[in-house]
Image (spheres, rainbow, N blue to C red):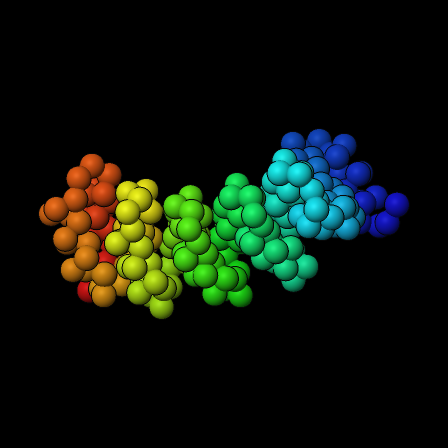
Length: 187
């Protein structure tokens, strides 16, 4: 057993519960990294459930190899796998994946568009405003709702007129999200 694992295994017996919990989480990350070859195999050739487990396991890690595997998963033929990979990439917050996430906005699936808009909103980058505003024309109300939420998070004044439109003419969650988003716009 290497030094890191030995130290973490010892920490599992620490009297402080927080230390024990952190040691367990760190050991889990190390073990996941040790299984990277298997995870890669699941992403590339596994069944749906194996792919999903692999994607979520990668979500606890960082690094170039992790990003590359998740970028492979966002092109998977299975919608659930693509959506999971998009969510995980969005939570990572790594700016290197913004462009591939923007590409996901052109996917045919509303579920994928929803996940991509939500992930991109987390970046709070005004350069994404135009791409997200295009989603306001989507037929799927869930895509529109998430686009409005994302625009609120970004807070770009460029979205103001569109948000006013939905605050006045929208209904239900669309209207509520637009009203909330208007309060987030920077002057």
